[in-house]
Each structure stands twice: as structure tokens, then as C-alpha cells.
Length: 231
Image (cartoon, rainbow, N blue to C red; front, side, top):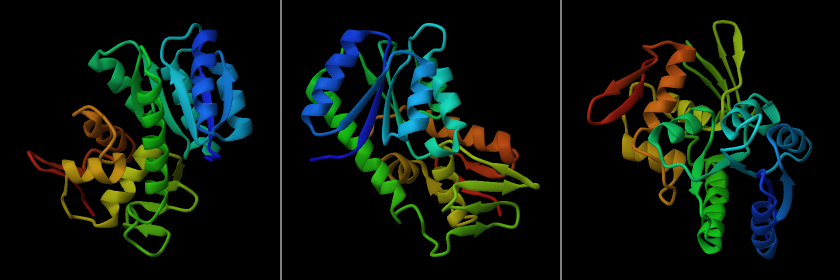
């Protein structure tokens, strides 16, 4: 049976009970919170493998909750999937920019939900393995950036940066082979996986966030192809 810890966050009690029931049937250890602050406190305490986070909540919505979670070093490796009834592109972009990993649309179908949960947990195991790490040393030194893959920290201009998980994974991939052009399809497959549904603009959002932190010329866009890290 699966032993992964999953935190469900929703202000609707029926949703918490419905999702919790289906996850427990699959053998997952389930925790619940009804608001953003409670979710952050619980996540700090249990370090969940996956956080299922409703977007529309009072006081602190899912986007803000996700941003605050990604600022906590111990939660960098937790996968975060949003629950939303909203399909607008801007909502998804805001979620990915905040550090989210995927979206699941309401109304929720149990089989689809469990399938997506399993896919997200497989993706987490994939990224934590050596598939994205092409160098044997856990430290990447580009001369401009120093990246410690064991501590999940980036050093730039004398400062430490703790990035959201997907930003860190993307930076590691691009810096693993400076000047090499990674195609958009390759980046999707290596970072998000074949069985994950993300929008076409997802990579653009993450590249923009990296440029904001480390300089506009750090990552070069190859129009119609992909991206490369400029050593």
C-alpha cells in the first residue's frame, strides 16, 4: 500500500471528506485543512509529499497559500496541485508562477482524481532521481551561479536563493549543459513528465521567473525551438 502523505486544503467540508475517503482507499495517509493558514501550519509539521489546494478560499486564497508554502525550505519538494472550477488562462499562469505543479478541475471524478495523484507522485520520484541530474557532483558551478542540488539552494551575487521546486528543477536542467539548446518538448518531458497536463505557456512563466532572479540574459530563447543557459 502507498505510504505517501497527502494534505487536502478546501473550505468545503464535503470536498475534504470526499477526497479524503478516496485517497484513504488507495492507502495514502491523509491530512486536511480548511483554510490557508491551517494548511501552512499542517504542512510545516508533516512535510507532505503532495498538497491538494483549492484556489478559491476566503481570507487567503490558494495562490497566496502556495506562494507562502514555497518560501518554506522544508516544503520545496512537496508537489502542489490546485483544485479549481476556473479555466481562465490567467488563473493557471498565476498558479504556476506561485510554484504550483498542476491543476485538477472541478467537478472531481474519483478515478480521474486518483490517476492524477498517482501521476504527480510518480513525477516527484522521477525528478528526485538522476534523470534530471546529468552531473555526478551534487554542485553545479557555472561561474555565475553555484547550485547545490542536495541542499536545493542557489548562490548568486553573494545571496542564497531557495526556489520553488519546478524553478529549481528547470534551472538544474538548463545549467547541466550550458549553451546546449533544450527543446520545449524535452523540457516538458524532463520536468513535468509525459502524463501531466500543463498549458503551452507554462515554460515561459518559469523562465521569466528565473530571469527576474538571475538576470534577463541568463537564459536565451531560441525562437521556435526552446531555451539554453548562457554560460
